[in-house]
Length: 218
Image 1 (tube, one colour):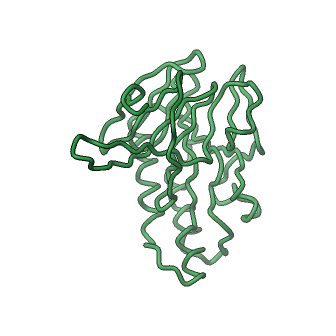
Image 2 (tube, one colour):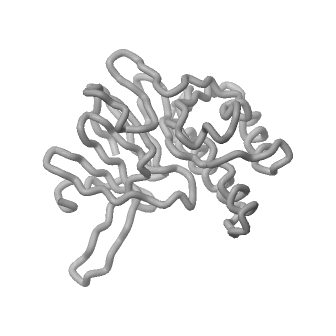
């Protein structure tokens, strides 16, 4: 779905990313790589295929767009993983497949558990905020102080109910108070149900399309 936000065109993908054509930049948030490893060490079984699924979604969006840059809005990692963990080699192999792609990171709260979080993807680490013109790129939407931009962190989902009282829960883009909050890209990340207020916009990610549900979810 093509929308206008922050005075520029933005394409929203059902794979849960946003493309900024004027900047040739693909935005994603909350990949949480290594979550299966972290949970596995705690004795909690999580499928080891979560990394592949996340990378496949990124690849699909890169192929569909003309992105020259991938900007990750925080929580690249879920927690600390070790150098011999399979996820490290998987990410390095993926990076080698995209040598011309600039990968950049705005750090999130989970990234503090993974020293040099950007190294595996040879990513440029901007710290907690990247400002380009009048647009800010952050992890936590609460860190905005009247500015306009993009964030992640909250893993927004929207819960909708049909006439038969069947509930459907979908990841969504939530535009509120001048900030577009992206859905979490990683698997098994949970979600925070948004409760839109007047003026908010909500775009739900279905299997193969993005749907504007701003009017029906209030």
